[in-house]
Image (tube, rainbow, N blue to C red; front, side, top):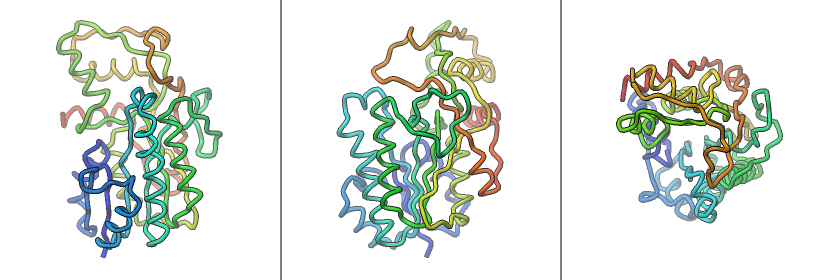
Length: 285
């Protein structure tokens, strides 16, 4: 019995896993959201996994409203930290493989070369801090055959994201000002979901391993918006601005490019360039 629990099933990554699940008939998937399973409740997680004989958990659930997190610290901590403790605890007890998704925001953005998995973490906002606490708890509890995958700038045909926001704003605006001094790598959630499902049977380690995954290439938010409009022949003009010209409740890392050589080498995978994946997403949209 190959039963897989997917948490956060209505989010971007969870939705992509759900769409891809039909290509993996060897697994029985259990897709849940907060209405089906409250992962901040340890007993409910334990009961659900026992009852359904879960063998793998793919944790796609996260509190990702970065600015709101500065005020809603308790809710953010519950979903990103406490829930990870619960999932890790049950995974350890029941010998369940756990794949947990984390973020580039565990870094402070002060690098000038792509961050490696073992670089010093120093989050600069509540969201990043709670995600790091979740990582640290999982590593300490140490469920076997389990991994943490950090990703960045996620977008999809599902949910709310930068790509959809840009296209919507362009319907009513002649020009947009977009931040040009924050640099990272976009991640098409479909690519990440596909990678997780492909590497699943190859995960075999006695301690929690951390990996980085985003699409190849580097860009600013301005570059990203420019390419979205270029590929869709959208006439909206994009103007670059600095972070200081667009104040937000949460501070963002200025450089959050991640080194992906570890996941590529360990699992022998190729990662598409962000422009190629953007094109694939836009075709679906």
